[in-house]
Length: 220
Image (cartoon, rainbow, N blue to C red):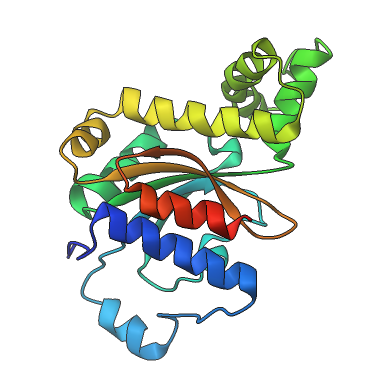
């Protein structure tokens, strides 16, 4: 049975950022990770955010945002590339679980973005990789856009892929775009920094800028 999170989009974003700040500061609370929480969730779930992130093993969502069981509805693919299954999973989180927040989480030193950059810059076709080729091809538009803008730094290519993913989600999912327009959900893009653990704000749609300010403050 699905229940609705009591949080607003603003409240959900603020809670997520607060958890990341605790993780960065080395003061995690490890909430909702005990037997009582496990039993409480048995009848149903009410996560406060859909977290669509890269599959990289260093992006364990519940750890870097200091959350626990039932808090995050997590969807992950290499390079956070989108297919029908991803869209369906995110729409389930928004329309059925009624999560008030959708987060696209990228990170520096992303292997998928790096492979796409090499394929473009060295003129190497994305073949011979099995289905990895499909991931590389889906990241390539972001690489081309970043190059066209004159970018050379890794962080700019990562930001471009995050923005591209957010754009595709809103373009392809009527459920998500309608929920955003109605004020029922916020869609946020964050870039995780591997060295210090900070989730830096890249793009913000539908959330209050106070939460954005908190994110920027934590990265300073």
